[in-house]
Length: 68
Image (cartoon, rainbow, N blue to C red; front, side, top):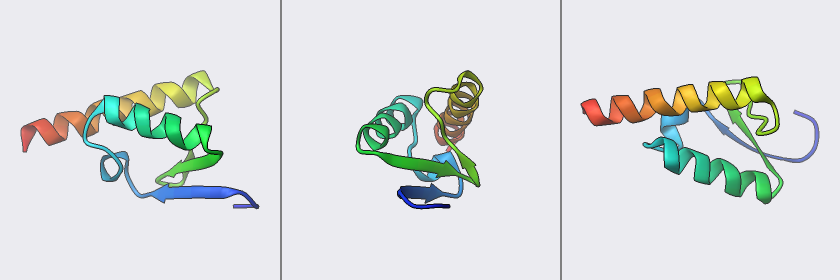
C-alpha cells in the first residue's frame, strides 16, 4: 500500500453491524482522506462495482447480526 492513510479490516462486519452504519463510516473515512481496505479489496466509493460489493457485504453483515 503506497503512501496515504488506510484503515484495514478483515471483514465489513468487523467495522459495522448495519448497512447504514457501514455507509456512514465509509463516508466519514472518505471525507477524511482515509482509504478503506476490506479483506484485501480497496473500497472505491466512485466505482459502481465497488459500491455494489460494499452494499452486498454490508447487507450480509447486517443479516448475520440480526440472526445472532
